[in-house]
Image (cartoon, rainbow, N blue to C red; front, side, top):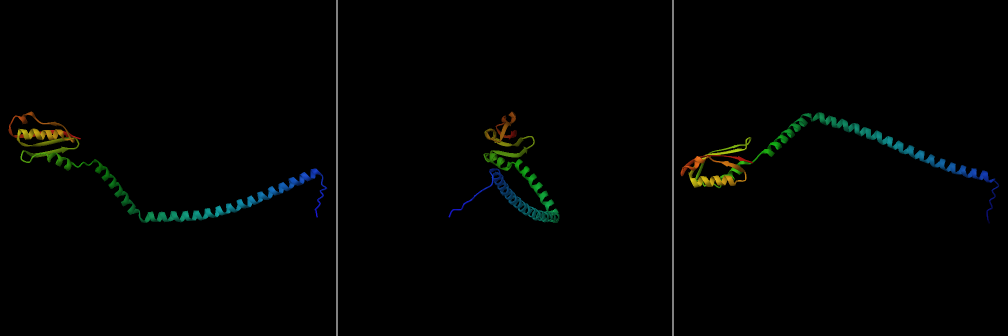
Length: 176
């Protein structure tokens, strides 16, 4: 059987009734949203208090650890400063022993006798005093110094070349 619906309401009241139903539906949705918002807010407030408690306990622990280990922390800071300064000095260090050994390894021990070797880092000067057995040995030694990549502006007195044997010399140069 067919259900018969007779709506005897006038059209204006029908429209008002439809609007009322829509309004009631929107009101229900807003109530649900308000309840959900309230629940979420309560969860967030509860989480906030828990997090604040954990933060306070963590801060207390950090402060107590720092107070317990203050001398150690000062020692660590002091050691780090020493290491930093050492690192700066180490970067400025040059292995002169290797450089001098490489230069002097080309010298025949019988021909050149070095009595004094002086390096001045502040003025970048290099001085060698010694005796050469022959003039050729002295000239070859001077040539080795001039060809060295570390030394430039080699200066030897001209009077060193006047004697044929047992030449006392004093060579000055600059280094990089």
